[in-house]
Amino acid sequence: MKSAMHRIAPALMCVLLTMGSTLAEAQAYPTRPVRAIVPFAPGGATDAVMRMIAPRLSENLGQQVVVENRPGGAATIGMDAVAKSAPDGYTLGMANLTFSINPILLKKMPFDSEKDIALVSHVSILPFLVGVHPSVPARSVKELIALARARPGVLNYSSSGQASATQMATELFKYLTKTDIVHIPFTGGGPALVAVLSGEVSVYWGTIPPLLAHMTSGGCVSWASPRSIAILRFRTSRPLRRQECRGIKPPSGVASWCAPARRRRSLRGSIRRS
Image (cartoon, rainbow, N blue to C red):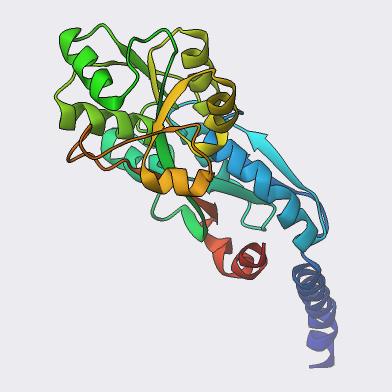
């Protein structure tokens, strides 16, 4: 019996030491920087929201939150990196509408969106604005619709990528107005916005953060819903009036924190306080 106990004791001690180390690490979380993955290129709404929140989250956690852009594959590349990361709380992601749409539109996903990734906390709801390059001969939504109907397939629009919120917003606009505007996808809202500012494309549906500076400088002509104007608190964006676009309700962009599925509960408190 004593011989058996002597053999078991070292193994038991190793287990206890390991458990103690694990518990200490959990209580001290985080002990190193946290990676926050944005599945789009820099400059878009999701990236802007992440970069506005990251300093506050860093302050709350006591460790730096490092924003990492992983664009491409209709946001599946970045989200796959989140899904396949260790569930230790040191990798977070920012999910938006694309995360919900991809399983419907894509035949094959590199991860299971229901089992591998869990939404941790809601972050933002951002109303959409519609912007056009100043060379487009339209100064109201009514004129834009008339122009698109008169020139089917001539106007084009940029988006953050396939299945992105910007694509869904513009496709909804096309469906409701019975217009034909050609889709040109990019890897994020930043490149999509640059395309309309340079005149490479005609139209861009985007949210407030990336469009704001260009609305005030005149880099693009934009129209906003009354709700958006109330948020902006100024009149540099022309109102999207009911009589100009009856039956069209501008959508909103939604963003949420996400993490590997097995880590969700322990992260909720820290993230929500931020």
